Amino acid sequence: MSSVAGLIGGHNFAAYNASKGGVRLLSKSVALHGARLNPQVRCNSVHPAFLEGPMMDSIMQGTNFPDAARARITRDIPLGVSARRPKSQTCASICCRMNRALSPAPSLSSTAG
Image 1 (spheres, rainbow, N blue to C red):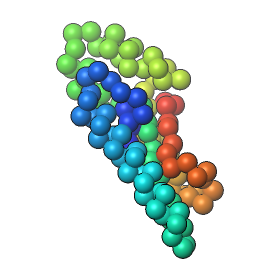
Image 2: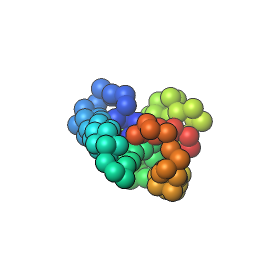
Image 3: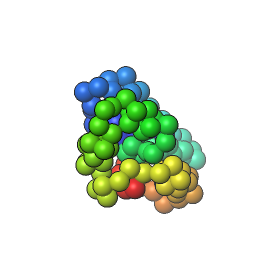
Image 4: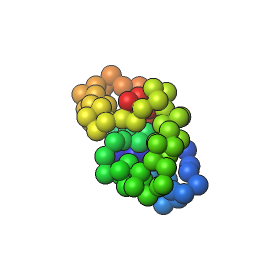
């Protein structure tokens, strides 16, 4: 599981951005290697936006203006809301179930709530 933070950087999440970007590139490398095997092996990474949960709660507790912070976090999400964990897990499940039907692209960005 990667993150949208692995696709775009943030000024205050350098280590998190680097680790999630690493997951994305590792997935691509494994996908390229797996494509040469017989039978072929696919590898995908999922890149959800912020999820409601402990990490988001921690961010909100660390600010004096949680409503403004939440608005900034969600403004770049197409549906304007952060995802809930089951939605992200559903996305990953779809990748697993449709493995043979997926495009060759080894990553999937999920920015819907």
